[in-house]
Length: 345
Image 1 (spheres, rainbow, N blue to C red):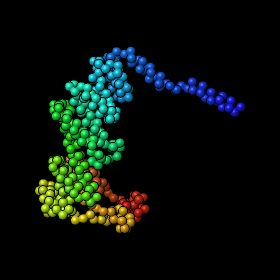
Image 2: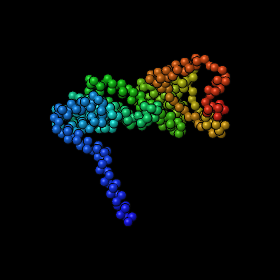
Image 3: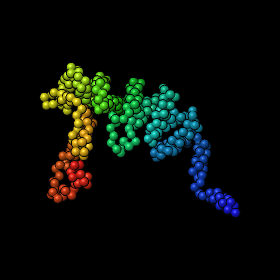
Image 4: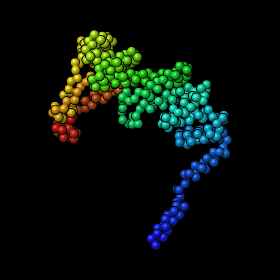
């Protein structure tokens, strides 16, 4: 009896699905759209794609461009549709697909008059992949990321310029190459700072020398010289350390590693950081080490320097605001400051 009731309920549930309005609706709609597209002429199909592009309907544009290529692989608009597919992938933030489509176009049409566009988008896609998922929300230091994509983007833009020096995209590619070169140089300094922390002074010196020799005229060169001077000093190679410090003082007199008299302030060993928050919380029981660290982008990199200037302007404006009474200031203190008795302001 129970088995009969079970099968009766099951049959009712299965049969009830037939009148649910949303079952297979999307599939049927897609099937109807595909049938409609099959009867369109090449021009009518291409015009429909242009409507998708004007409306920035990237999902339908991708689907229609893929269908267009399958339906008219050797038509009058076939090559243009492939270029537009590269564009749509890039606009929809699908950088891997954009790069793959650009690669495919370059292989199929190496002599196409607009193949330089494929190189350009391929380079942009590589740049986009150097950034993290939340780069637009949370500020990140690109120099700390894997430099592989940055090197690839630099190589792509270099090939674009060498093959098509008069391209519409050549000027922008050159500017991006300057940024990528600065980024790669800064990555070497970041690696050197890490090696200082690990006590690998020879590796740090090699990174600094690599910047000086291979990334000349980049904002990272002053830090490269400072890294060399400090690392050689820690290895006991005072002559080499002195030479690097002398070059640094002669060319970058305002580097923070130099004192008022232009002498390099060597750090004899890795010292403990008494001002670190961990040292303050543990009353000096745990003192994190303070290895040499060089980052002068705010001084020598025009972009970072302008950002620092804007921040300083904001700080100056905030200091000109009249302060209120002591009681008001006390109530404005953060809960963390009150909880730690002023330890964390």
